[in-house]
Amino acid sequence: MALVVMLLVTAVLLLAGTSFLTLSSTEIQIALNERASAQAHLLAEAAFHKALARLNVDPAYPGETNTPLGGGSFTVNVTTASGCTSTSARLLVAKASVPVTGGTATAEIRAIADKVSYPFRWAAFATVPNGIFHFDDYEGVDRTDKELWLGNTGLVDSFDSGGGAYDAMANSGARGNVGANGDVTVEYSTEVKGDVQAGEDIIEGPGVTVTGHKNAKAMSEPFPTVTSGSTASTGLMLTAGQTESLSAGTYYYQYLDLGDGASLTVSGPVTIYVTGPPIPGDSWGELVRLGDNVTLGSEPGTQLRLFTNSEGTAGEIVRVRAKAGFRFYGSLYGTNTDVYVQSNSEIYGSIIARTILTGDGTKVHYDQAMSSQEVCHNGKFTIRRGTWREVIPN
Figure (tube, rainbow, N blue to C red):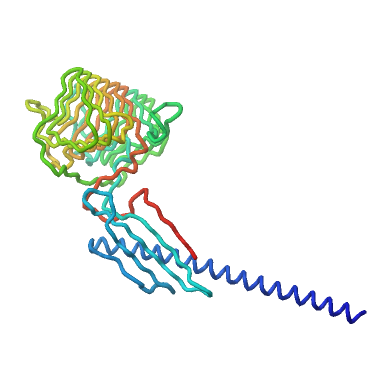
């Protein structure tokens, strides 16, 4: 009986030992697989960043095949991707493999690289540095060297048109960031629900509230030059109370001149280039002149992009002026344009301009959906926002 019991115990111990050995071997293999998978992932990232570097040296870089690196190898395929109208966008597919016992760990990264920038992440930004440009005296107030000036009792906040129309309670947020490469002036009792950035000084009046960070003496923000690609032959003029709607497409005008109560809406994605020369007989050099209570654009503001003379020379006197009660749904981009919006106006979108002045009671509601909009230019290849990356380990 003792011998039989000993044999049974020995058999049990042998079975347990075999099981533990098998489990240990399996855990070791799992660990090796995980390590190889991580190596393949990092190798694919290295391949992707190498491709970016090569593209910035040689835009015709076609990719490469089975290049050894880090105990494995990678392949990069570079093809033209849809995106900017300049066709500079490239679809990069970086595949990496690392050998491991019993097979190969692989990873793949897909992303679009393009020569793009993202200027519409600001509610309002004045692009010039301190002391170069200033607003002329519209209302008897000296605003020399005040590149971004937010008037009294104003508001800057944010919303996302992807979630519906702006609503102060249900669809608003604190991403209404404003800035300037020069000074930022915020007048009394104005609330900025976001960050304030200035290349020079931040000047605040009494009762000003800033919910985000304040950053003075900041580094300059770069903005691309945008060319219209076509010459406008005439301007667009609407008389007082007149309404007009533009269907989806690209339009070129020398100027926009809309009388009191006029309305220019859009029924699809519309891009308008206002190329100049300014309105005939206008002494202010205005490219866009809007009377009282004018509406420009339609909800959501992402449908309208308005470009004003951002390819012009720095010394040109070019302006956009909107009188009281202006309603704007869209993005305005004019790095060589001075923008003046009078009192009690509302902007649902973004304004990027040389200098920006808003009147008393004017509200700027930054549309967060604009942060993914791009402006093509001749910069360096970078990873475009909103693209995706997938890692596939075997």
